[in-house]
Image (cartoon, rainbow, N blue to C red; front, top):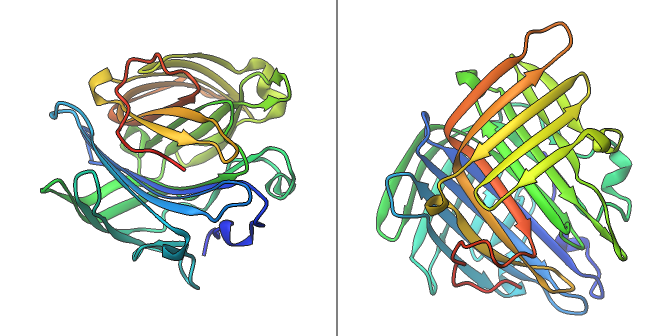
Length: 329
């Protein structure tokens, strides 16, 4: 077990959200699946649980997405299981389940390799037990490969060696604004990846500058990105379907440029445990260019075609991307 669910230890008076998620992309790009098992708990209320599935395909008119939500009786984390919702399970090495509700019916039966070791985005162990930051995240399987099949709205997709990852985040409050950037098998090298979360946090009336946390693995070498000491050099110019970033780190500096076709962006409502809501935009078939500077090396340029994940979460509602017709919380 590379991580553990936190929702079972949350007191009745507390607010909480939690997500286990999978992103896997067809080799060569063009199609990607984004799958989430989530928990949402408002203070003094029982939790609810949801299953979310999005299939991205450059050849389609847009993402195909569906979601179903269940009560606390359908939520658990039995021994040996990361999370179980209405019979849908995520366990070490596999994910399975189905969705039948207001949206398209869907099912999945996936297997994944262990890949590289767990990525802890936060740089210190104590940050995972402290009150701040209010959002915790790690990637128990940051560089895996997936096999199996999924079906959504009658469309069957076979996965054979799709590179991807499994992530896990939780907390009492979403960041005020965040970006998630991820891509697998950089330059065609198995196990090389970038997985970075960049966020602004609201503390009272004050909102922090952008702070990045994550890692890039290049030529098999893991390089930490961001951290509080690098916040001054972190630069972000974000939009609904494109972003320019400068991410300094430990003996590394990464310039990232990511762009998606607006038709391939999915938009969801994410409710905060204590309210109100964020709009979250995600395209897991984005184009990405990375220019990586390391001492003693020439600048390395890596380009990813139709295979990177770019996610933007904010309170903005004027982004121009149609929201999926599913409530949250």
